[in-house]
Structures are given as structure tokens and as C-alpha cells.
Length: 256
Ligand SMILES: [Zn+2]
Image (cartoon, rainbow, N blue to C red; front, side, top):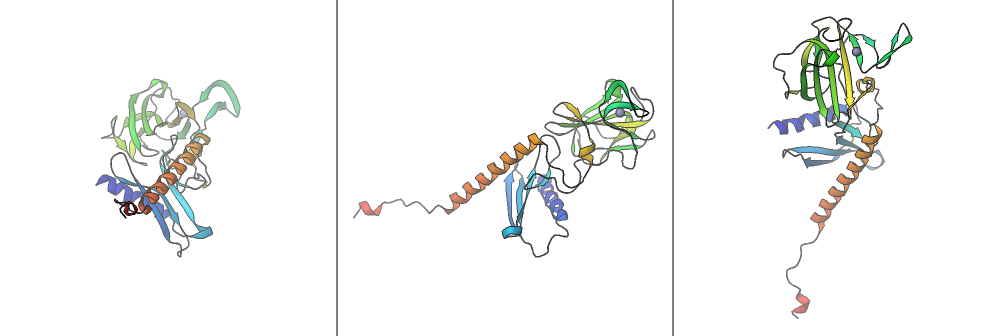
């Protein structure tokens, strides 16, 4: 039941993206696959006809959460990540550390900082599984959430964790995971938020922005193209199987 409901959510999400789309366009084709747990899941959906036909793909890149993408690999709808501290001011960006506008010459800031007060809530940036919860080097009390094979977010300097959240727990985008603190090596209360892709710290900013035209990263785009081709080939193959005329059991010409 859960997976059926999940598939329903996925379609609702897509339909919400179509709000404002030409009312005369019809959904002409929905192609579903079967996920490893046996549930039906959408692979792509085509809308409209002729030159105005658009196809949208459900795809899980290695380096960002699953979503709908257009034919060119642009993410539809919301940003990949929800703000972990909505409403908080960014106090320090990703990159070489700067003080009073000058490079400090010491250290690289491997995430972004949100100015916050102790006890303010911290939310999961995307759906995922809690991979670490506890002390973590200079980050102090830290939660790590795995979202995709090669994608992890990290929330540092926390004061405490949310009730009922433990290692192995599944969390939803926007779910409360803990509270701001100043544990570890921290000069004051703030949330330090990092994005780790393929084991490397990368700037979380692009993942938090929904400027609408964000393409998949180059490696993911390559996987996306291959995946599109594989699915189209599988669909064509399935159609050919259906069209093949029934095989005659007898060759009558030889009986005459
Ligand atoms: Zn920081």
C-alpha cells in the first residue's frame, strides 16, 4: 500500500507542475516500470501532440534527489533541497574563509552557515535515511542524511536531536531532525550545512535554488541520456512483442 500511495504522490507532484498548462493538451502516454520492491513507478509521461508534445522523465541521479526532469535534463518544480533553516540569514558561504572581506588564509569552509539561535529547529533538506547521529569531529553534534547513492547532507553544531529520529530512520523533505546549538568548534550558535557528493564537499547553494533552469550535472546528464535510451528501447521492444502475429503451429503448405 505504501508504494502505491508513493506512486500516487509522484503523479500528484507532476500534475501540480502542469497547473497553468494549456487545458487542451492531453496526457497521451504514461509509461510505468516496476521498482525493485515490486511497486509500479512512473518512468516518463508525454503530454500534448505533434510539435507541442513534451516528455517528462522520472529520474534518480546519483548526486541529487529523485525528481521529474524535462527532455534536456532540467529539474522541474522545486529546488532539489528545501532550506534546512527557513528564514535564517546566510552568515558564511561555501569556499575559502574570508574575514572582513579578506581571505583569512586559513581553512576552507566546507558548507554554508545559517545565523540562528540555540534551540531553533533544523529540517531535512530532502527525503533520505539518517546515516549518522552523534558527535562528529569539530562539527560537534551532527546528523548526516543519505539521499541518493552518492549524496549526503550534513547538519552540524546541533544542541540536540529530534525525538524518534535515529540512525536508519527514514526522513522526509522538511521533517524536523534536530535543533540549532553551538557544539564542536563553533564560534556561536548557527547551523552549519554541508552537501557531500561522491565523497566530496560541494557548494550547497545550487541545490537550494530553484531558478528553474538548473540542468543535471555533467556525469548525471550522461547517465540520464543513457537511461532515456534504455527505456525507449525497452518500450519499443515490448510494443514489437505485442504486435507480432501469432505463430502458426502448422505449416499447411507442406501438407498439401
Ligand atoms: Zn560552517
